[in-house]
Amino acid sequence: MLMETILIDRPELEQELYNVAEVAGYLWEKGWAERNGGNLTLNITEYADEQMRALPAISPVLPIGKTLSNLKGCYFYCKGTGKRMRDLAVAPLCAGSIIRILDDCATYEIIADEPILPTSELPSHLALQDYMIATGSGYKATLHTHPIELVALSHSKEYLDSERLTKILWSMIPETLAFAPLGIGVVPYALPSSVELADATLEMIEHYDVVLWEKHGTVAVGKDMMEAFDQTDVLNKAAAIYMTAKNFGFTAEGMTPEAVQEIRTVFNLPNKR
Ligand code: 2HA
Ligand code: ZN
Image 1 (spheres, rainbow, N blue to C red):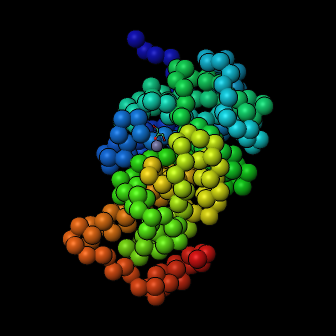
Image 2: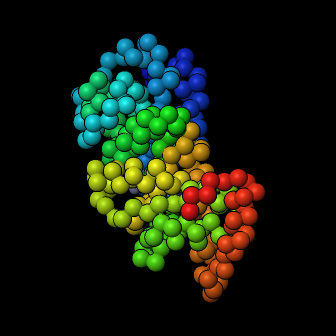
């Protein structure tokens, strides 16, 4: 039996969801997405044609938990709560759904393909989406995942200082600074899914490429899901090198501050800190 899907006759949207699925596969392969771990959203408003806008809701009206004034009439693909990334990698609309934000900017409804409730971290993700629109960033993707080495580092007070952690990671290989020039910002532990966590994340993403939730995971944003993934991957790679040196029995020396500064100058990177 062929299932009805919103992707029929919408090849561009289908391609976008393929890209999201590709990233979900990488998250699983990297061991960052145990069980239902991690979640993501993608702003797909540009693909919301008249027919899509006319589709009836397949869920009750549901609260976001925040009022986000830039999201009026926006459409998002969201991973489903309790769903596995490795299932999303195979069939994005069996492990997630498409939602429409209603005019009050505080509620939403599910429109396709199935009434799969969105991610438990919806307030964080949509607050970021709202901010990304407000700043005209052109960013469409938000990604929360559980990268092993970065989460491990967040278990020691020594690494919970954003500036200190960023400097260590930048000094592991030249590419870290080149591709994550704003570094990583640490958010102190807060209950998963809480509005408190959402607010702290939003404050941090204004200043850093990736946000690290203490003893939990990371949040990254990007023009598309692959970009959000790459940002996380680059920083976690640096953490993995740092860890490998520790396993060899020494602390990585790190590039000298002069070598880091040279990268910044030659590649004309922002000199924020
Ligand atoms: O299960 O990772 O933070 C999804 C999560 C919640
Ligand atoms: Zn999580």
